[in-house]
Image (cartoon, rainbow, N blue to C red; front, side):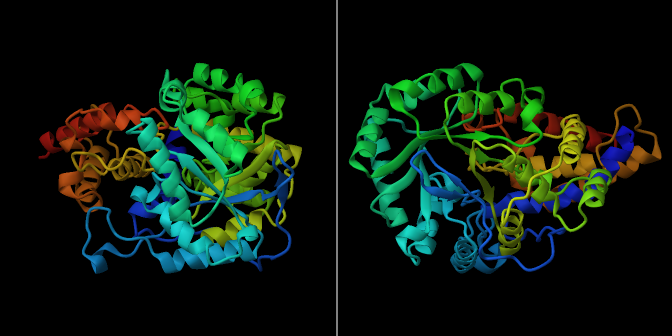
Length: 459
């Protein structure tokens, strides 16, 4: 398959993928297609064991991409629509009824609303029916006072007297771990909280450079980490560094944790939903192998092949997502050697597709100047996949004119004019928060320059 065929085939996938990843900031997202059919069993969930013998569902519910109410109904046009608590409750009820017991949130998710919504949904169930994970998300103010206040607020929002899994959240830049957790005394405080039983398991999540990872892993003998959270999927296994030179391949992260017997929680198992909506050429190969399986199930079952994986987090926006993901884990059946080899080929093709590696995690939001950063990247990737990024030097060709017209006419419809790339002033605030280390202002200026060139070439 040549590059042109690959780009053409990916188009439908990116449209659906944008809906899957949007969550808390896109209430108009449509439900992704391609879910597996059939009844979902209630008693077949696959479980793994944590550092203390607790049974943990292999599927974890990531409370990052929760559904929101329609902005048109609420009158809120800038991503501030409230979370649909009723739908969240239904999804949580369904997950618990089908054996899911791990729920992951953070003070930073859904613009600070995720913990409260998670607490409302979970508190309706007996405490022994769920395990809750949250984080020290002190990105903007890492003072001891502000960090401890954040910690105590998590208990109030979640309506719990203990937190099952508590994480030092998303360190990875040079000196980030020491600055946010060690030098200010926060880690010492959390270790005492673990000793007192208010934290049952203490761990961390990593996004960043290898020296920071190596430093923290090496402290396992001192701190006895109960678990660690890493980004791992069949693309990042060998290609994370190739996609971004600051990232570390997941096989290295996994192996280092496995050597020390540290249970692993997986984030971004579907690369922000993109591995659930692959192009037609690849999807046809997977469907030929197992016609009744969803594309997402392949990514989850691949993770299930690694015994150190304790749970895989999936940010779910609709009940259909919960149903399909439960089906993939109830039980999580192993892949054959041939199927593993097929996913190796899929990963190689995917890694060499020139999309912006945004997972729509929303960590960069809100932008101080109002840009819809994840929305702009999703639109650009969609245009790229559909062949609507015009090649340079072909201004007089009909294909260029078609691509130019399509890009310009849909840009304003997809992204509000005041939230487009040309409003980036290069303040760099977003750079401190992007776990994928995307040079966001640079990419914004590139998209702005490209848009200007298209407008200048109008005839």
